[in-house]
Image (cartoon, rainbow, N blue to C red; front, top):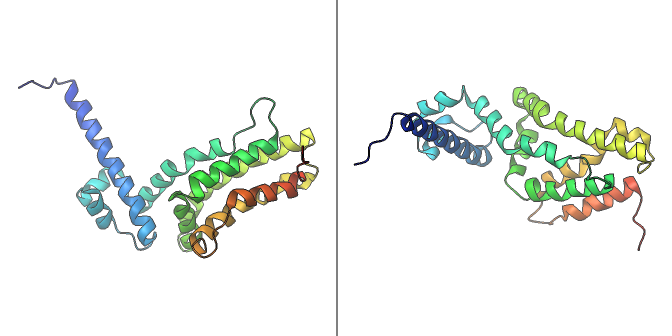
Length: 210
């Protein structure tokens, strides 16, 4: 039998620990979506992840810390990419259309949208998670969007200068799409990408036919 070197053993332990940590996060994702924040129990997360409850505490302080890590891994990495500046020579409108398409594909039509709906539904009862979500997701997204609006105003693409004070107006269809998908999508499917385009027509003016 081949002996495992002393150098390899710590690496294997680290890999196993990382695998267990990821299994916990994946299980927590399912539990939070299925049960909501208030009703999720770490015992159920542990059972779904196939680990002892005590193993969770080796990685996360409590349920809130676990939820925060879920948000960091599932949503935070998307923020900078979704509100990315336009490519060299590209228009701000094109950048916002790209944002809309990516948001629909990566949030509205995926399980990530359920996290947003959870925050909307339970954030008022759990202000700590709402505050965390604002710091890590909302404030970063609005900052990126405000920068795009400023650039569009400088270039003359957007005429309404007051829009720089209300980037929420630009991203409003994103929230409408997430909430509609969860509540009414089975009754009246929403073409969120088309809705975004109409919204951008209102901001930039309708595209001229070529």
